[in-house]
Length: 270
Image (cartoon, rainbow, N blue to C red; front, top):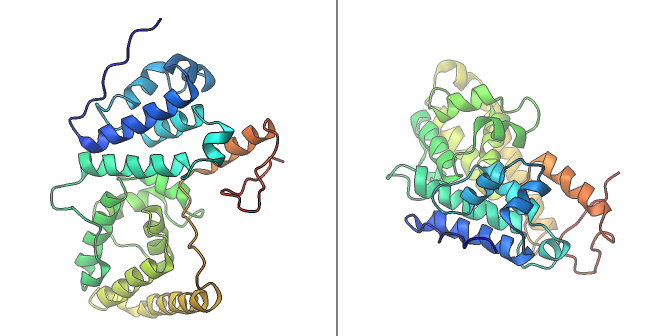
């Protein structure tokens, strides 16, 4: 019989909440950390999985993804009230905020308070903090090819530059968990206000920002007219490789869940 697991470190409550959740997944499937590591072909290792659920530190997001995938079963994904990966992402972001956010960032930035380029740059940086400090490479992978290069993202995060155009601004915001059209509209409206006070070269292109903002307003009006009462789409939290991994796993299952009130929409692997 193995030795008892050490109690979760509760020094930082948000870290402890993530650790409790991960340990709960492990207990539910009755696996050991060694079994999880073998299931993941040794990456992450047994020790890494154990540290991830200790509460002593915030694990890398890739480790959290691997932890959830190692404990995945058909029932846990299809019958739970909330997708375990979505819940893991929420808890991970909270833990990152609690351990990395500076003392003055205690809530999401309000784009309504932006009026200058400096305000816009600061608000984008604070939104990045509020999203859990995603790495520039991870943000690039969340975006369309070429929209948000990692090198450019790093300079935006460091406050050296602003996004070059509305497309890059929206890509940055989506990579920082701003997905709702209504929220994106507020940010683009703020960018238009701010960039009126920017350099002459950027003011020359202000029509691009105004046009992008107007297009968002049209989309919002269309959604109100066509989709009133429907639930808003949940933003994706999984990298492409994880979706592919899910699909491969589904081949071994009896088949995709397809009830009239299905909770998730699975795709078979080709």
